[in-house]
Image (cartoon, rainbow, N blue to C red; front, top):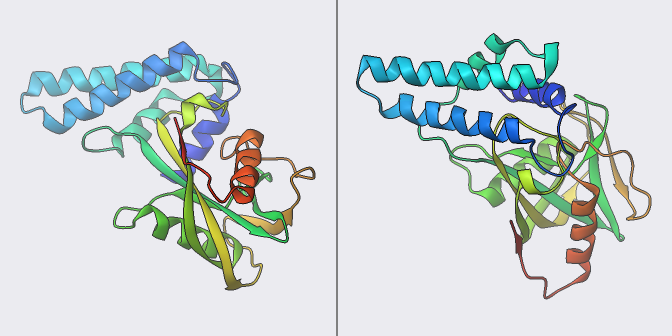
Length: 226
């Protein structure tokens, strides 16, 4: 499902404000969440039909907002994969520093750079998830030391996305390993604050990289949120 969501994100991001979701997308996401939760708890056939209709409307709104780039049926299929009470997804990202430079990986999906990370898996704590993501995407071994920020993806300039998500940024200590790409990454490197490569804005914003450099320089950093 991650690949489906990434493709949808890439298509939807061409529209709307670069500061937060456009209103039509916010409404569509709320309708999808209502439908998902309703389908989880509904026991009456008529209620089930109504929630399925709401889900279809949400998909049509997103497809219409993105023009001809998305088939509503593709969105409905993506929504069907979501079950249970609708809650925000959790994206974990690692800030790993070496000689004053930050670790970034180049994504195969869009050819742009980001912090190592991704969706947290069920059964893992956030710190375990972020350590695993660093190992899988970059080849390096790290230990999570501080939670730098918990941010609502909608509020920090990311391109629009079909689902609501929270982003957890961890300051991690490099303990071993060596640079190694994966099926998700094309390259691995450390970069200075004023020499960043083109970033994958669906995953990380320049302002967030700046925030993490500040965190690394500040032993008494207080976790930021929202």
